[in-house]
Image (cartoon, rainbow, N blue to C red; front, top):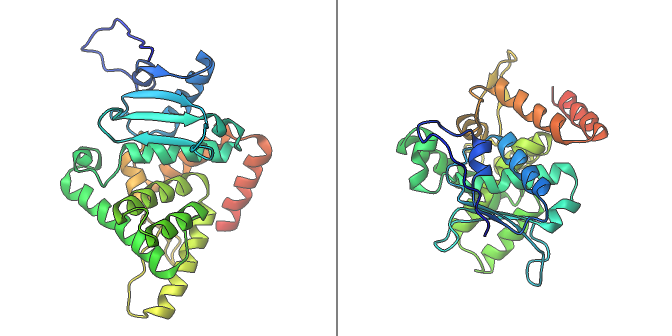
Length: 267
């Protein structure tokens, strides 16, 4: 694994992009390719202190459909990987994958990440929320996307455990809140409708923020975690601006037009 070591004043704090650029890395076919991944991670804005290395992997046998991965293990702890298949995806999927894996890197299910959420009480609250989302999804059968539906089948077949399902649910809902909020709102409506029919006295779990009858935004759902975690975001308005900015930075013009149309339909 190649290491890039910069001589620097240890009292000067690195920017996230500089920190990522200084990490050990392997597999990238060009410096431009590595810098592109760094640019995307940095632009999404999640904390990067848990990142320990970057890698570019081939989709060889057994990994034909993988787009990205985060290694929480011991040997390769903190390794953030993207796969060659990712380059063949639409921009929304590429950014979504980076957001998905960055969420794993800052998981609320990991007690050591309490400082990222403002303290242990806040981390525990975030973890409970994600567990509630996972539970509501399984109860209603209204899945966040096809990947979560696949994971639910694996859970039912005892091929994965509940913790894995909850962890992936956190990454999926975060990914969608950044790339396709309109879809997330539709899934929320479907889940709530089904839940009210099944258990009228149950309180539904919100997936994203909502406007009250006076048009004021009530920050809720995964947005609470995103506002806490994303650099430079401290309000719903900041989050909305940040998400729009990401799409304008990385999406082609025709995709941006579709984004604006979805936002108009939501209002």
